[in-house]
Image (cartoon, rainbow, N blue to C red):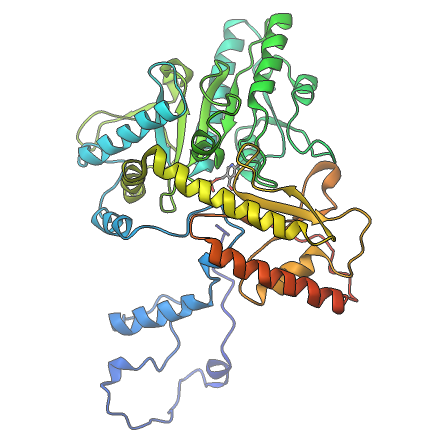
Length: 479
Ligand SMILES: Cc1ncc(COP(=O)(O)O)c(C=O)c1O
């Protein structure tokens, strides 16, 4: 969410710019409509309007203004859901006045949240009584998981009479939420940059960076940049060996923003990455990504109640009962959590496996088409055992096709497709990569249309090589 400055006035429209400040007489046109049906002035922009307007006129005007936004169905940049069942819309409507924090007033909504938590404990193989809660998304969940780890580490250091002023965390190329966590909570971020043949966090890299001030290691199940799953079990084994040698016990928090709602269904036989590994103390996931819920819900789970220090839990009583909470926001909409529960019971394991399995199949077909172009090298082909349903590619080594991936992104944008090009990290920070995220509403027909447009764009760009240097690195925010 960008911060908006009140001084950043919207640009005057040509009509309002030429109109005198006194708003003198204007041409009037005869009409048979009552005047309230006509929107013959711009919508208020810079000042709080002295009076309101007609609801249907304003609704239409705002709805039409929103047409200038991109089309969510063609947004292949986002990990977030862009399709919801009609029943979810209805449940969201029912919940519009429910505040999730007010568990005393809305005990049944609180019950649905608890059911989701128990279902996630089951899905992620918690050994006993796991504990967790919903959040706004994975970013808030990451903050909560990180705070719990910092508190546990600090308690341990204090008990041993050791300093608590220099905590650090070790991770690979993480999503920006972890940069925020490290900055907001004063943690040294030991982030391993990517290398040509090492795109994921490697156990050896972890061992080179951990020490007794490491609050946790954070592998990602579905790295934002390339979608691959990091080797959580390999990292856990390396930390087991480290503990055997040094006596220092370093926990793992898994950022499973995407993978938490994929791997259990589409890679059930892959190596353990969840609470089956005793070293994994907490996990976050985004309900609004592959959890298939509408925007605004994430989850964080701790392996056992003692992994969430009691000191962090607030007991709020003024809404009419005792309410233990651990979250950054207070008031929050309840609809997303209710919709999440609906999705769990509507789809079950079978439904999630079918929907995500189809997304992987579409991704793999797109990857095969992209690989047919000799100017590209596919980095992730959507293989469900390796990562999320996405296709990621770069320009093949040594080719100079006469265009950059940024040019290709621009060309596809002309047809409405958002297929971002962006750099990786570390040694690959100067190289452009491109990504398609396949979600449930990006079906075979859509994929076929995009692949035709992509081939036509490549053909066009080859025939009209770019003469300006558009390869310059551009800012890009992964959502
Ligand atoms: C790996 C990873 N972690 C965390 C996040 C942040 O998730 P959210 O948008 O739910 O806050 C993302 C978002 O893309 C992500 O890919």
